[in-house]
Image (tube, rainbow, N blue to C red):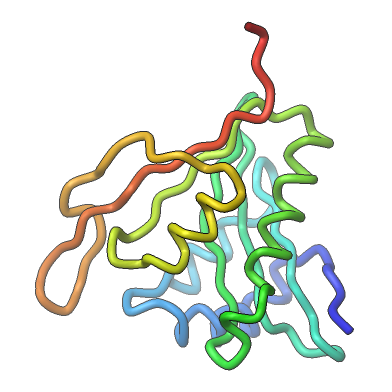
Length: 150
C-alpha cells in the first residue's frame, strides 16, 4: 500500500539516493536542501515504509513550478509518478493556483506523455537547457492552466 507524506530537510539523504539513480545530472545535495521552507513544498511516496519517489514544487504568486519529480527505477512504469502528479494538481487547486509549469528533457518521451495525459501543453522550447554526456539537450516548457478569470 502506498502513502503520500510531506517531506522535510531530514529526508534529503533518502531523496538524493533516488535523485542520483533517476537523473544523469542530478540536483546537488545543497540545492535540494535549499528547496525546503518558504515557497517550496515536497511530497514523498512511500511503499511499505520505504520512500520510492517524490516531487518538489515551488509556489510563486498564483503559479506553481514542478521543480523535480523522481520515482526509483524499479518502480517506474507502474503509475506512481501519475499518483504524485495528481497529488500536486490537488495541492495546487487547494492553494488556488492558476497554473503549473515544468521543464522536461525533449528525450524524456515517457514523462512528456504522462504530463500530456494530465492536461499539460507545450508552451515553448529552451534550447540547450539540459547538460548531457554528449553536450546539451533542449528542454520542453509545459504548462497547465488550472484557473482563469476569463
